Image: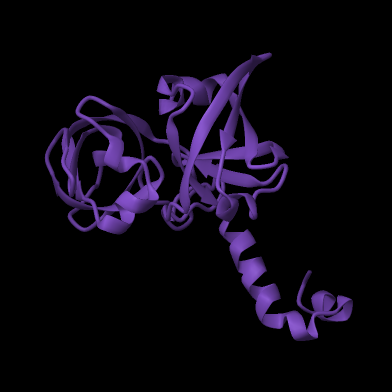
Length: 206
């Protein structure tokens, strides 16, 4: 489990069809074989490491769901280690299970922030709500607006400077993970629909 607070921006050393090697520093502290690291929001297993880099294997499912297959040597990536029990939850609960990719349509300065507009498929948009959470390339962000087939997020200057968002351009694909609570709520409602009443919702804490 992650929080969507990027620890550092790493650098892709090599990118093969089934393996990535990434240069890093901060996330290598206490890293171990078989441990997890989120790369652009995708939770991956460490298969090797040394003092300044680590490697992960890429499955066909990961390549289908994420933008990691587009990485080239030299590309920057967002990195985060898993949340430890008792750690500070600075963003929101992020599983590192990317749901799909979206595409940056535009980004517009607004005061001290930058507004990103991102197109997303229907299987993402059904879970997007204004003022709700979404992870974009592993970054915990708040949805500021929603339209037909797109949503917007406001990125403050610190996030812009300390993540790969400052390298993004219009048309780029970004990894998206919706709030897991929305998925569970939907599943609960679908299962309970035959007996769903106001009284039932009250009894179950809604």
